[in-house]
Length: 444
Image (tube, rainbow, N blue to C red):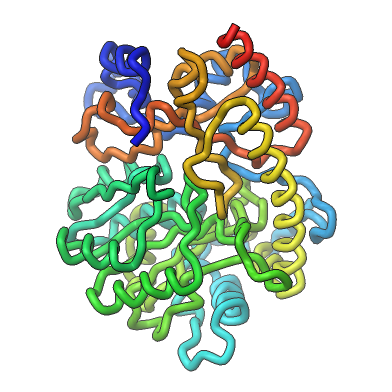
C-alpha cells in the first residue's frame, strides 16, 4: 500500500479534520442545527468560488467537476433548447413519476439488456426522482435495521447519506490499490456472509477509480446476492462511459442484463439524465428494481422530496427513444474515449501514477506519491493548483467515513486526487500545462 509522505502525515496530524471541512456554527438561532460537511466536489467548488471561480470564465479549469461537457458533440442528437409546458403539467407530478416516463425507462432497459428474457421490467418497476441524490436518499430512508456494506474508496456523497439515517449500520469494505481495487464474486460472498450484510451500495463503474464490474464477474455478483439475499444498490450513473466493450456493440453495461426475475432478484439500479445523457441541470433520475422496493422508495419520496418536475419528466420521454439513446451513447463514447487516452498520457508525463487505468467513468484516480513535496498530498495539490485556477478533488474525500468513526489522519488516500476529463479538450490542455508548470517549479 502506498503511504503518505512524512510531510503529508505531519500536516494531517496537525489538522485532524483535513479533508472533512464542517460548516461553522452561528450564534443567531442556529444552535439547534448540527455542523453539516460539504461533499468533496461541493467543498472544492465552494473554495474556488471564494477565490473568484466562475464556471463560464475560460481562465478557470475545473478538473474537479462531476459533470460531462454538455454542448453538442459530433454525431450526437441535437441538444434540447426549450421545453414546452402542457397546461396539465402545472400540477404536481406523482411522487413516483409520470406514467409515460416510467414506461419509457422500463422499455429502454428491456430493449438494451433483456431482449428475449421472460421477466421484463414494467412501469411498476420504476420510480422517478429529482436527481440521483434524491433517488439514493429515498432508498437509504427505506432500509431497515440491517448491515449495509460500502466500499473504500467510493463516491463522496455516500458519506452523509450513510450517516443521516440511523436505522441501518454502515460497514466499510476496503479495496486495495495493490489489487487494482478488484473485488471478485468470491470476495463478495465472504464479506456478505462474514459481516452479515443485507445490502451493499456501490457505484459501477466506480467513482473515483474507474473500476468496472461487467460480464461474467457482474453476473457472479448477482448470483451471490440472490443466493445470500443481499440487496445490491447499484449506482449506474456512469454506465454509458464504458471503455472496455465488444467492438460494434453499444458501449454500456448494467446489472439489468443479468437479473433473472425483475421482481424477486435483490438488485436495485439508479441512473438518470445527469451523466449518460449529459443533462445534469434537469435533475431527472430513476430507480429500477422489484415492485416492492419501488413502492417503498416512492413512499419515502412522499415525505422526503414530494416528487420531481412534471414538465421536465414529460420532456425526458423523447430522450429515451431508441435512436436517441444509441446516437448519444456512441457520440459520448467517441469524444470521451479520445479525451481519456490523451488525458491519461498527459497526467503520466506530469508524474501522476495510476493504480488502475479507468475502465469506466470520466475520471482518473491519480496516485501523487511520486510528485515532489508538497504536491504529493491531495489537499496540498488542491491548495496550490487552485492558485493557478485549476480545481482538483483531494483523495481523502473518497475515503467514505460515515459519522467520522475513523480518524482522517489514518486515511489511505492522502496521496491521491481525482481528476475529471469531463470538461472540453481545450480546458484539459490548459489545466495540464498549468499542473506541469507547478510540478516543475516544485522539482526545481
